[in-house]
Image (cartoon, rainbow, N blue to C red; front, side):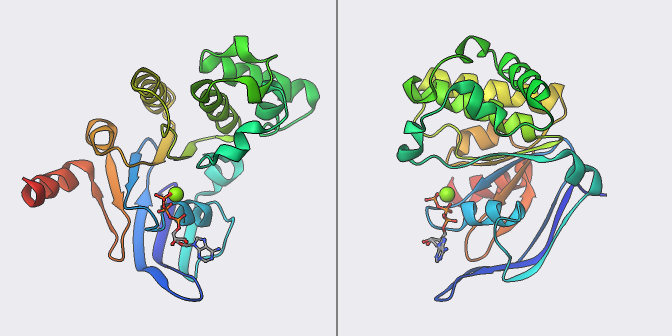
Length: 221
Ligand SMILES: Nc1ncnc2c1ncn2[C@@H]1O[C@H](COP(=O)(O)OP(=O)(O)OP(=O)(O)O)[C@@H](O)[C@H]1O
Ligand SMILES: [Mg+2]
């Protein structure tokens, strides 16, 4: 059974419909790139998958095992949230479960996994954008028992930090078998890392990355 399955999903607001009849499934170990223009409805889709808002029509089926283990989420960043007055440890433990001690252990393990344990005592708002993004990935990792949803995780990062970020995510995917669903505007990264592409528009498409880029080459030369 798929980890996550969407059937005939329609997403609409009072004044307009973003898309209709979107169907796709995500299986364990997939690395799905969600592409599409600004305002196409990518963030709205991810929020719907997480149950933060209701689909207008259609269904979302999440495997019981994944439901139990949890989905990690790194939201799209708006500059305001960067000033959040808390320590790195507080930011990361806020996504962890269990008692105080267990939450701390989980947070340290996630910070270790992303090689930023030395940041744990720092104030979140004093970190650079790249450091903040790693901490937020560690936070998402704490809640992720099998799947990570990442909404434009590399936007605003420099070339080197972006490359490091992609390499960490690839490691989580390949070594830990973590399923990745990443919203991005980075076509090259999708070509390089993606197993599947979900292209969001008024006529959404879902297919293997190989097939998507073969069509892309044909259309764009
Ligand atoms: N609660 C809401 N009520 C009405 N319209 C909304 C609501 N939330 C989002 N929208 C609209 O839905 C559309 C899709 O928004 P969304 O944030 O999902 O786009 P996106 O694909 O993530 O874009 P970007 O690449 O810029 O992040 C936008 O036109 C937005 O204004
Ligand atoms: Mg968005």
